[in-house]
Image (cartoon, rainbow, N blue to C red; front, top):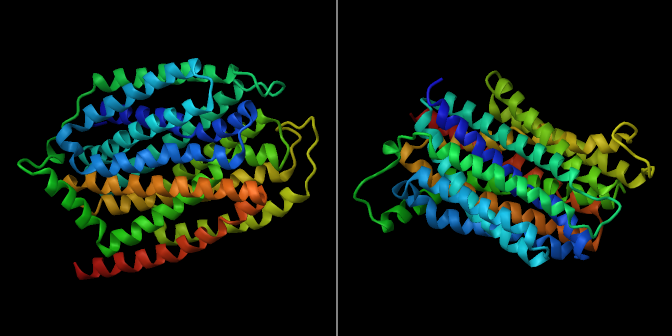
Length: 411
């Protein structure tokens, strides 16, 4: 396989940040238990993660190829390794704000660089879409494993225990491993660079791309999708522990199951999308997600959980909720690959920056809205809210499809 070294490195980089970024759901649950933080206050951790992602992506994306994609990824990995090793010594809520800010900035470097690199190591639109789908599936695999490992460090009997902080020793070690694998991997970045161009011209290119009608509609769909996905993934542990009354360790494992189902969905989508038009696949998926929400949440309100619950004797609703991941799975990588593969390679970094910015803004908006509704009303009300953006995405993707169809007919 051509470029196998850099592809494996990109997989490992994405795996590391899946592990780190999506620990925010488990950390939000743990800071509530360990430091007696309220839900609405705990939700701010999502903002400390996502706002730095958005700012860093906007500032750096357009001229990141000038700095060097590989150098940017190495810097991101080194920063998160350092902060992971510091975390076990800083057992206080304020430090997690700094930790997630550092993770956010580092992820901006990684994601923009990874998206720009995909265009360098794939030959055509089909290969681009296939690799993007596999990469996003690996990301979900990192979330799955991260949640499972995190649950092993939870002391259900002692909410104030700081034993859970030891997970960050492992996270730091994996980050260093990814750093050294990338350090010794070759990457030809020449196609991503445009010589003799000023920073002003770099920023101008990003703004020109951003205000194209097709791109505006695309980023709206990305913003709303991540709003939905993050509201579920971030608040799944709190929903299971607070509404379904499962043990905290089982609640975090539920997040792992959601990630695992999403990973399976992305692998399956790669096969299905090669046979069925993307608009029909995504439309069907959105309808099924809405049906699951409307079915599962009434069950959550009426179910009584046995104190001795386990995954063997859990009621139907405990398994039904993560099933949403199977149908949310194809949306994000399919939309990203469609827009990136339609642009010249030197513009991929700028477009990736816009994807990262609006993904981050969608993530933090969804988490904060869900956290506040969760605190004021209930977890079921907060998850019912997702039906609004789900409906909006359904409408937007049909508008997007119409514009793409018109553009293809003009060629």
